[in-house]
Image 1 (cartoon, helix red, strand yellow):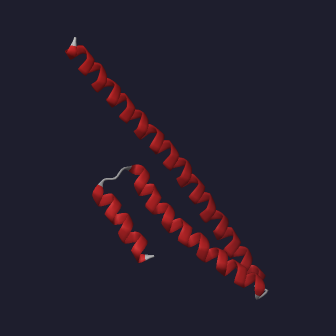
Image 2 (cartoon, rainbow, N blue to C red; image 1 turned 180 degrees about the vertical axis):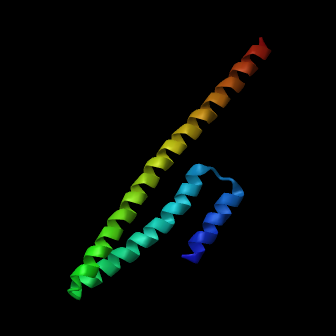
Image 3 (spheres, rainbow, N blue to C red; image 1 turned 90 degrees about the vertical axis):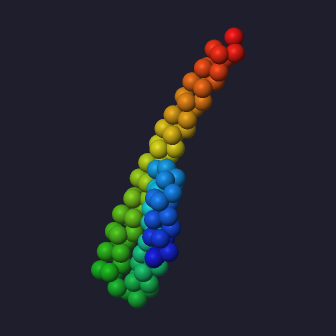
Length: 100
């Protein structure tokens, strides 16, 4: 987990964009999903039903957070690509006007 946090810090320091930052957050979420999934399964096998139920709730919350991060990343990527496309169009239009 510490490695995931350090990697996230690197992404922030490199200013790689919102999508990269969200990617780092999702890596941590996936780690948590795997951990809670295993714990929930073990609790079920040990017939620790109250613990299994609580762990399932937590697992569901982690999965919901992951889904929200995915949606946010997709929206951020689309916005960034759209902005880059508009900048390229402006540059191309400006260059065409100069060459005439």
